[in-house]
Image (cartoon, rainbow, N blue to C red; front, side, top):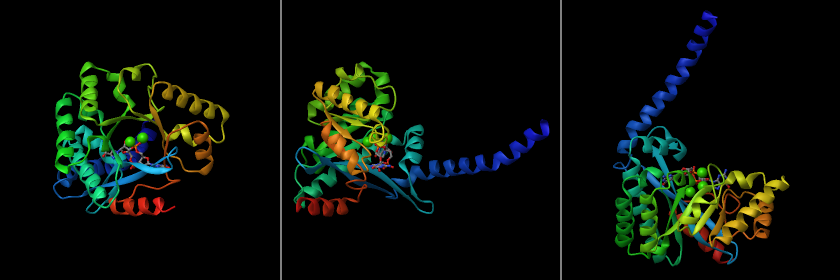
Length: 281
Ligand code: C2E
Ligand code: CA
Ligand code: CA
Ligand code: CA
């Protein structure tokens, strides 16, 4: 047994080393990525089913590492959270997204709402700073507060503290919109969201992907949409990849569609091209 175990360890360690090294590299380089201008925001179009227009976009962070290439946010956001780098990164994202809204307005794209993803950590114990960062981003770009929407994940609801509620109401007070992200993945409870001033709930891709094949999944999606609408909140379906999914979601009264069916996330310029090509149709 001892020998077997030893072999197992010998085979296992190099891989662990590799991933540890990679994480160590990412952690070290993440610290300077902002200064070196290695981040870029891409924007995924969100389609308004009722008005048949693209009037929302989600800002998604892209990191071009000098020699490792494009790193997925799924890999570096957790490191940014662990090291608190998420705070300056979120501030940068807020500023950059506001500037894009301004740039699009100059190109004739009016009334576009841009969503910014905000990690739980950006809220904790620094609610006031977050609100200030949003206010200064909006002021610096000279845009309407209603052009900005913050997306937060539902795990935030587990720590439903008074401070959090105050931040939400402060943000609503300045006119910013609020969305609950990845709904249906974790500890979602319809009960705890009734106290928060949400404008939009985003149904996670996992709820959408099996829907066409599975009648119970259809029931769940339709019921969720009905309940959310009952609370006066609009619904975005995430990760919509097929026309069949779109047909079901339309039928269920879903308000917005986001997914590869319409477009992948695009650079700000490609988003503008996409927008104008869609509005000619
Ligand atoms: P998310 O907020 O749920 O963003 C949606 C993710 O789904 C994006 O992945 C998007 O590219 C992908 N997606 C969109 N449509 C489809 C589809 O039809 N099929 C499939 N398979 N995927 C689709 P991405 O850009 O890799 O981002 C991953 C996650 O990283 C995001 O999930 C979000 O949690 C986080 N993230 C991205 N940017 C930021 C940021 O600026 N700040 C923070 N805190 N987190 C971010
Ligand atoms: Ca999101
Ligand atoms: Ca999501
Ligand atoms: Ca997600």
